[in-house]
Image (cartoon, rainbow, N blue to C red):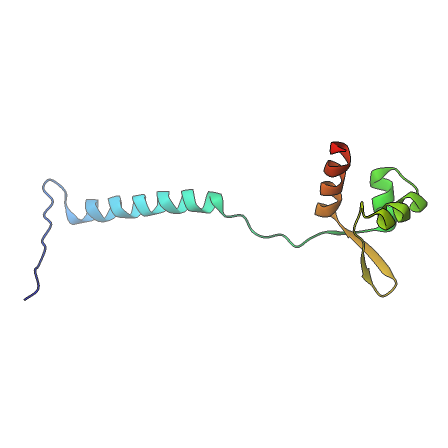
Length: 96
């Protein structure tokens, strides 16, 4: 035979108990939602945009591609760079 557990609350009516549970659940959802951020799609930049941001020439940009400092992405004749990887490359250049 299964054991039945009964919990009794004194001094609290059912509506107050329900509101207490709901407010606690909402508080936990607020804490959890602060930890979750939406995933943003990567932003791609053109060669001209990257050269302008870094204040370098297109020749220097090509040289950095060949040296592996930056990682270009090709789609046919188009060359693009990820903004996040550009930021990481700048950090790693400064560490040298």
